[in-house]
Length: 248
Image (tube, rainbow, N blue to C red; front, top):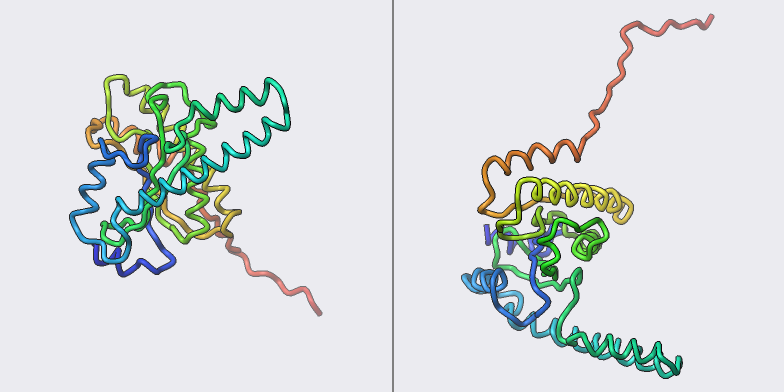
């Protein structure tokens, strides 16, 4: 499978994966540590090591943050008042090396199984609550990721359905069903948008669930999928009676 992934590296049918991470780019804990371990199991002869790729991402984030601060400072000087001071204090609160929820960075790979591109989507603890909606930063991040897929020949993308990688006590059956319904419906809407972005190219979206999910919960989520992603069957019209020729 890894060989097949490498062989299709320059094809127009790339595969992507959404990985949920915290706001620190160069930290290695939890799922990020596990991902780094997997990526090191086999040498990548085509792209730099993950650490090197993330170091480049970190430098880009720092540069972008410096540019934002510069523009905010110039704006504050023009405003000459209270508003400028407030903007400055807001920028000071943000760590320039971190990213915000909903933002993501990309790593490229030739040594993983069925994955060429990994989208590292920043999320926070708010996702463990039951109150997120379609405007949540994580949901909007998924929309932006799908847009990147359209413009860069990524035809298969795998998304964590519940927007978490591990189950916890607060994730009851009602919680899971509500979250899955939200993600299904939002992704469906984004896919309909995708048709206008790329002219209707056929794409595959795979939904991933936590490994510890119960079998009952898995089947409930599986049954929800065809209800939301309804496919209209084609109707073939045939004439049973021959058409009479009335010409003389």
